[in-house]
Image (cartoon, rainbow, N blue to C red; front, side, top):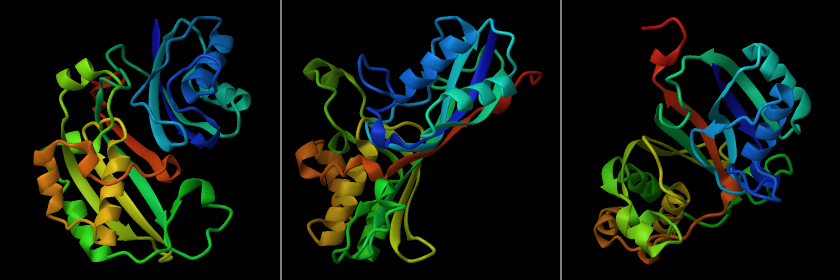
Length: 260
């Protein structure tokens, strides 16, 4: 049995998220279907994380195993020939048996884009939240720094849909970096966050809370209060998915073939 890692970029607009669903187009479903055609096997494709409907990726990572004799390069070329143009395999390599896209991940980077100009250019409207209204950007930058460190993010996540699961799951997560900056052209506010792992809707709730700070509904130190409250109703709104992109997944390099 051989093991492969693929790095994937996609426009999530027309898909119902990463995870396979019956009778709905998903990223995992599209790639798994093509892999099965290429290998004549029922290939199990594991992603580093689930992205919701409408969320994009530049560096999603997935892994699979197969008995196929195709090389990594051949898989990449064949997948890109058969997948829709909104899904691209930007990297492929054969890895050791211990590699798993999700369980071997050391961290993820997400980015959310807020377009501040009056008119959104057609080329970017699928990838930004348009917000041309006044914001206290300095207060938002200070608030973004309050996310760094290990905290209980219960106020910044959605319910799993099960009351029992909500009670049992840990909502503590560690954020390594959290930064809000203006884009080079000055038209966008770009929020970038790096952490070990994230809860459902967590980044989108974090951005919504930053917007409430920018509007004056909250102050930066309210972030610290929200950790204590553990109440989703007290944080900002869950912003729309189109502004969110999974930029990169970091993995330990020890899984590479030939390395100790």
